[in-house]
Structures are given as structure tokens and as C-alpha cells.
Image (tube, rainbow, N blue to C red):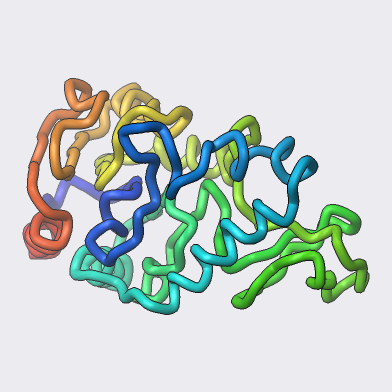
Length: 233
């Protein structure tokens, strides 16, 4: 693969599912037993902040019970050893990429281990419960802190940086994504506009599978390390 210099990788819920995190909606439309409208919108937070905080506090606690899997580790290795440009864009709000060692990383949907103060706009790390008792470390205001998560109806983070990277990419790889949620579902077409090679690694074909030049199906923990080995050697 000597002709490839710049790589953009998109990761989704499928890569963290093998670590034991259910980060996606079930077939019945519920998200870990809740309607999305009740826990993952700005309106929900205004209507019932206690419920929203409880939902994310449980997920935050769950992070301490799981570990990165072989797919996270392989991508961290690629990040460390790849000599060209590389950007891992994740739709996941967990910290498993970081714990595996990835550095060139962008959380487009925010981070579970961060709070966001709606009064002073400060974003800060937060590992415990984030309820009404949480105070912003900058302005010390109580009751104005929300999870730093991009909810439905909000703009994902880093879109300008992501689009710029896609337009310079020689290879775009999508790992463990459904291909159903935009704007991420459109990244493959942006990359192809620049004539980048495209690869999907997934448990089963995504909704956008037809747009990829190559498709590999199986567990991310098996397929991603295999692909990284091929790419580095």
C-alpha cells in the first residue's frame, strides 16, 4: 500500500460492542430501554435533567467495567506507526480508543467523560456522576452542567476538520457503523469524490455498503488487526 499516504478511519458502535458496550438503539427503537426523545435531545434535558443525568451516569459507570478490545489496540498501533496523515473519527462517546493508545482521534459526537457548562461554555473532564450537584470548575455554577454529548438535532463536532481530512484522504475505512446516521453516513461519498479507496469492515453490510470498493465482514476484533497488519507491512 505504498501509494497510500493519508488515511481517515470512521468507527461506530460495532467496534465497542465487542468490549461489552451497547452504544446503539435496539430493534424496537429504544436506547438502553429509553426513548431517544427522553434522554438524547436538548429538549429532554430541559424537561427532565434528572432522567438524562441518570441515563448518562449509568453509562459512565459502565465504562469503568470494560476494556479496549483487539480492534482498538490495532488502530492505536496504526496511529503510532503510520508515517503519513491519519485521523480516527469516532461516533462513539466512550474512551476505549484513548485507553488503547490512539492519539490522532476526533470524537464527533462528544465524550461521555466530559461535562459542558451551559453558563460559561467550559468543557471539562468528569468521571463520576454528573447530576444537579455538579459544579462547573471554571464558574462554580451548579445545575448548569450537561453531558458533553452531541444529541439529536445538534451539530457534530469537528466537521470542518473531518471534511478537510476526507478531501485529502487516499484511503477511507469505515469500521462497525450502520451507515444510517448522517453526516457520518455520507463520509464515504465525500472520500470517493477525491478518488480515495474505500473499505468497509463490519459485522454485516451497512446501509451504504454499495459505496465501498472493498468490504470485509466479521468481528472487528479479528478483521481490524488483520487489516492493520496488511497496511503496515
